[in-house]
Amino acid sequence: METFVPSLLNGVIYGLLLFMLSSGLTLIFSMMGVLNFAHASFYMLGAYFAYTITQSTNFWFALILAPILAGLVGAGVEKWGLRKVHANGHVAELLFTFGLAYLIDEIVKIIWGRNAVNYRIPEALDFTIFRLYGSDYPAYRIFMLFVAISMLVALWFLLKKTRAGLIIQAALTHPHMVGHLGHNVPRIFMTVFGAGCALAGLAGVIGGNYLVTEPSMAVLMGPIVFVVVVVGGMGSLEGAFIASILLGLLQTLAISVDTTFGEIFGFLGLSGTSEVGSISIASLAPMIPFLMLVLILMIRPRGLMGDREF
Amino acid sequence: MNTAGATEPMLKVNDLHAFYGKSHVLRGVNMEIMPGEVIALLGRNGVGRSTTAKAIMGEIAPRGEIIFKGEVISGLESHRIAHLGLGYVPESRDIFPAMTVRQNLILGIKNMKAPGKYSVDDMLDMFPNLRARADNPAGVLSGGEKQMLTMCRTLMGDPELIIIDEPTEGLAPKIVQQIGDMIAEIAKTGVSILLVEQKLSIALRIADRVYVMGHGEIVYGGTPDEFKARDDIKKEWLEV
Image 1 (cartoon, rainbow over the protein chains, first blue to last red):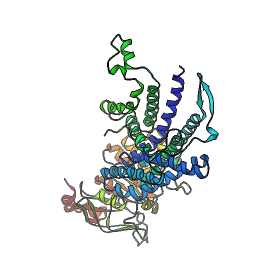
Image 2 (image 1 turned 180 degrees about the vertical axis):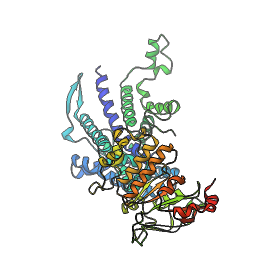
Image 3 (image 1 turned 90 degrees about the vertical axis):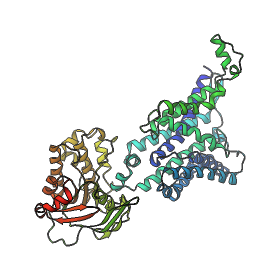
Image 4 (image 1 turned 30 degrees about the vertical axis):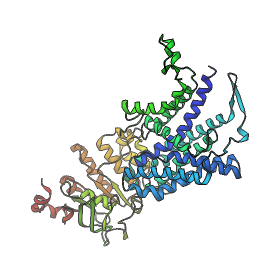
């Protein structure tokens, strides 16, 4: 219990961070019809922008400004890049985002260097908020939880309860018709792309100092976000949410399990001394997302909640 | 329904060409629609009637000149064309199935600050079928109800000319009659209509003039009475 409850909380927080990334990606997928390889790069940009802004002002400015900047870069990419490439089909779009991811990687290395930067949790949030089964629980994680839930509620309200949200949803599935009704679809798409990138940027702001802000952070996070979107079901926000939390919990809980296969074999009455026996459950944690990806594509290709197959 | 005294066409299409990839679908379409006029665009499947509608609405790139209320609209984006006063009810109907009937109608409003002459409630009052299902997802409506909803949604944007593509396709005869009545009612409010239709019974009942299309161009134009006398045209361009 003393490891389970904190792990559960950590899992939910990590899951919500994943949702911040995957919600934008899944909206952008609905719009383009292909996955945006560069999505995690905007997560990285958010973290680096926040680091630079924090240097001259403070974390709270960065919390507002860095996602906006990431969103503006995203909107610019859509307007001056992707929109032109879109006319040449999906393969061109996919390759464009692939190139963009590497481009952003290199730009980040040139500006901020190849090593991790010293982007830290603000002092105001660097304390123990409560003790959980004898161990300290950091306040910053609760702050992450708060930001993530606020974002979730705001996104839900915008998409489900406002006319602008209805127009966005309709434009994702019926772009031509929405245009004929007088709504500016290119501008809607630019906004969706920008907002998705801003959400990824926000995840970078609050995740970059919790994890590490370094040039490889996009490459590490990108594949996991892809898994979330595919497992949840391409284009489904509800699916992305369930898959984010599921993955967050599975990964965090697996890390906290000290048991080795040997002990499980022993429990089952088998020999625990083989090479397999020395592998711990925790060491399998990084494998879980990709195992889920492979299994879901075999068993349920449309994902948990999606309505389209590949 | 032709407004007396009007001399300038509301819509003028000059030498319109359009392509799907390398195939040359429209080969110089010329037509005019006067204010308040109902035009039926007849022809066999695949002669380019829907393509003409899409080219006018900016969904596919047109070559040639399209003038609406004195303004050249060829090459404009769809939403700009819509804001000038052109409404479009596509053959695919394209209702938003996951949204309610009411939400579908709300999305027909172009500008919330300056809503059109109809409110959502006006529409629901006029169509009791839709009123009964106002808060149901539009995806569960019958084919006829979907068609009504699509036309109402377009009317919410206050268009001056509506292009309606194959509104009665796949509908039961009784419903076809209702849709025909509805189009006639819309025309009575002074809105011009370009009706792409296969069924002569509907087209000839409602239209002030008919155009017949064949091989990507207009091959005949005249009043319904003149057209009825032209068995040669019917035989060559319409009968299967």
